[in-house]
Length: 449
Image (tube, rainbow, N blue to C red; front, side):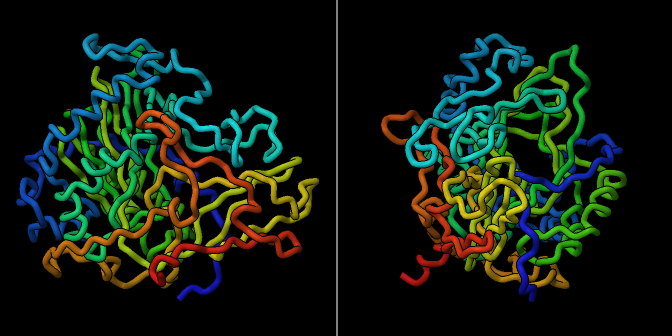
């Protein structure tokens, strides 16, 4: 058991290295699936594939018709209308040239308790100019070679969650893989849309990384068909098995020096696989799988729901991060709920009126309380065919409910908007002197009520 909290990490920081990926992905097509891919549950071959490769694909798990209302809604959103996109026009190349550098679509006036969400370059009392604001309901980026819109705001829409992460057939698969009690999903990361690249832009390329999040099991569901070379979710099979023994803990990911060496090996030597398929196909992966948006060289938009899942467990603290002020650095909260300010700059460590944020796009945003070292069998606590599925799904309160944080759209805001703003450090923690702020955990209050 690991007792001491490891050094805190920025919750937005993924595990990657500077070495480029060496191999081009090959597609996962139905003819490569083990027996059982078209049926609910897990066949012996699928169990073996997950144990040794870290993933399994289920074809037609959710009916295509379940996604139509959300695709229709997608075409009505500001990133589409701002770029003048039409569902019937085709092409849809590189709309990012029409997107604002900083959008503030779909945000409430609740930053630090009641203000407008700033842009990073705005002067504001809770942070140094230039400090990031964090995720937005409409995250627009120009990645590598392709423009990407991550519609995080739809990820907490109850109807969208019911059609994707909490669909009954998804819940069945979660228990078949993870085992119960499964934490009923309350949100996911939303719809990730990857657009065709501008033909004059550099060729599309992979950006392999591991998220370093609280996720035990991840999944990607296609909302429309994704043929090869259309930005399909790309994985590095066996990467969870290779990375797992390099973590200092079994359930919370804690990178060690060995982790970067293994990541370089994965990027150089492991053959990546591109998940291709029809709307309603789902790939389930161990939460520590190395992955990337896929090579995108066709004229289609890739629509996918990105999802994270966990078992019900006793939890520790949230992954908070605090903005620097007066030239001081950003400080992250550790697993014990402690912020440590050094006092080596003009940033007053006792100043509690500073912005603290979290990675609100995640369904699970809290560390697990137990800190065992990696098990001899990394799937010791998983199901994987050991027990029948019994519907052992528990309504653990969402993290934003535990901490009374805003997230859902309010005051007549439309669907697909909202997000958790910065709150003052003094709202979530108490100052104990010597630069130490301690957060009060509410993670497990619901278990005792």
